[in-house]
Length: 248
Image 1 (cartoon, helix red, strand yellow):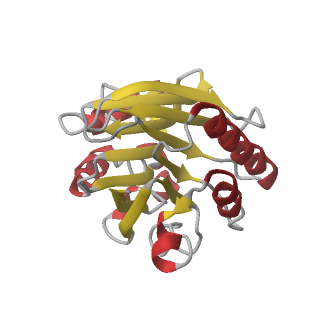
Image 2 (cartoon, one colour):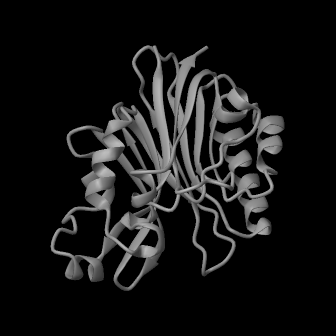
């Protein structure tokens, strides 16, 4: 069995510099990836001002709009809350989501962050698949705290022999998270395994910075790909990453 996963910071459904609303193009292109599990960051759960401004703004939350008829189960972790709405992380899955919890790991009141942790029941897997969607802080102090919280959570709640996927926007400009996750949890980064270094994923038009990651345990990475340039550069400021994983 090959498991197909993807991670994407969708920039709340807007193009780079918020020039265009791209939710419909986002849904169309996300489906072309053929992923079984999708990790999304900056997902708009509600935004009354956008709903009033755009005639074709989805009635339902973005994660439900994107998942419709393709991914049967969804989970949403609401992180940033404001008067007219909220946004956070989401996981879309073709497999049943057995449980989900969003852990607040914010280090500053202006930058709300969470770890969205789901257990998935995947046919043929002896144990539940643990998936954690992350969007870490821009500042290094916050990232250190959040990586520590991620390590503590997996040690506390996930059996050592359980399969794990941690994916999202790590904002890890200096690539400091990888060695901590490898040493503490045995996680391997999908692109590091394939190409020796994490993928360049930002900005999406011409990626220079290695911000987005897919970390795995209990899998062999068969293929990993960065989706950048047209049409992805029209949809978000980040590139999408995808990987094909074979259980060990």
